[in-house]
Length: 167
Ligand SMILES: Cc1cc2nc3c(=O)[nH]c(=O)nc-3n(C[C@H](O)[C@H](O)[C@H](O)COP(=O)(O)O)c2cc1C
Image (cartoon, rainbow, N blue to C red; front, side, top):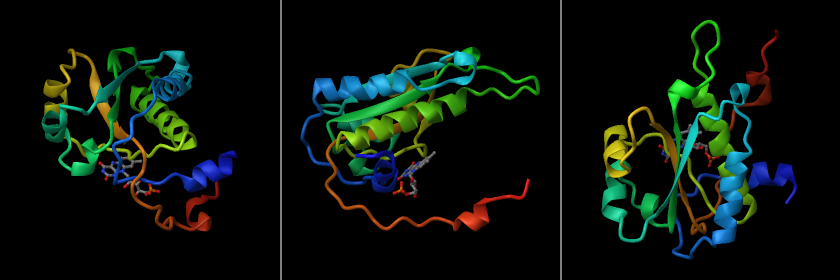
C-alpha cells in the first residue's frame, strides 16, 4: 500500500472481529512506535499491549464502548512528563511525542490490515488503577487493535482552503 492509500484508507474502526494479532505483526507495530521521532529524542514514552481476553470488564472501566474490548488487543501510549523536552516558554512536548507514537502505531497497523481507533475520552483514574500505572506515568491515548468488522465511511474534512493560513 502506498502512503497516500494508507492515509486515505485509515478510518476509526468501531467494530472488531476476534481474530488474533500475530506476534510478528504486534512486534512490527510496536517497532513502528519505537522508531517515532520525539522532541530532542527524549523518548518520554511508555507502551502498553494488553490482551483483552479475560480482562474485558476491567478494560471497560477505562472506556465503556463495547467495541473497545471486542478485538484481541488494546494498545496504550503513556508519557513520562518528567522526561519530556520542555521549550523555554515552559511547554512540555511529551503529549506531542505521544501523538506521533500513536499515529505510527495506527499507520503500521493499518498497513498490516488491522483496525484501530484513537481513544482519548477515557477515564484516567480507572486507567491508572486497572493498568497499575506507576507514579509519573500518564496515560495519553488507547486504541483497540484487531481485524475490522465494519466499513470505512466517507471522510468528512474541512476544505484545504479553510486550513491554510496566510503567514
Ligand atoms: C486525539 C484523538 C482522540 C480521539 N478520541 C476518540 C475517542 O475517545 N472515542 C472515539 O470513538 N473516537 C475518538 N477519536 C476518533 C475521531 O473521532 C476520528 O478520528 C474522527 O472523527 C475522524 O474520523 P476517522 O478517524 O474515521 O477519519 C479520536 C481521535 C483523535 C485524533
